Length: 286
Image 1: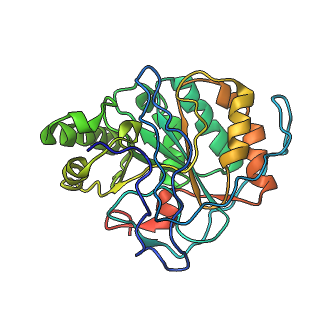
Image 2: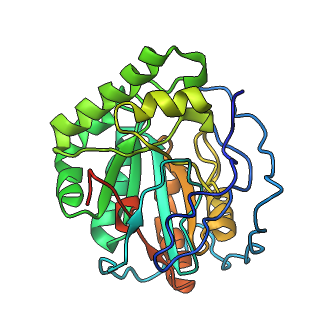
């Protein structure tokens, strides 16, 4: 049975200073040019998320003073060997993630934004796109510093549940090898199954090469396709909340035009952006 992005609670083993992880809420956003994801069901046995707080009255053109964020010092917990949809426990952390990379200019803009502000990002690379080679020089210092984390979003963005076991492995291995060659990193254990689709067979095939933590999300900027700047600001106001993993995309430029407003929401709410490696430890990132 194919699963979408709402799959119960993340691991309860990750409890050092944290509690249970948040659930996915909202609609899955498929990557540009691909079919949309299946509707999201609600898991009845898990705690209810706090109601979203309204975002500030930010509109395109508003300006926030950019301030750099210091690297957080956290008591890291073990990366779960099951899907995660949020960050564990209570706190003020935000995992801003972005997928794909169809537009090199958008990836470049994210890199410049991170370098200017200190915002910490986890980028899920779809390896077939040239953006990861085109922007290697700009991204590499941020990756080396741990401010930007690279994770695996397969090579060509297929529905993994429709592939054979070896094909699943090949999709992940090819991007794994690319990121290792270009950036000198081991992207394990985090991978994001395209469309949020996975099943037990996908989890087992990915885990066979060390990708043991399928990473989903708890809120979306819905910019896998072309949307307006104001829509992105509104969705950031809805989903940039404590302990959320929020998904964006590296495909279209409206998001790059509202970076000051998105950064302002983070600052106004007292949130601290983190990479997944900031929060979780694994044998690949002890």
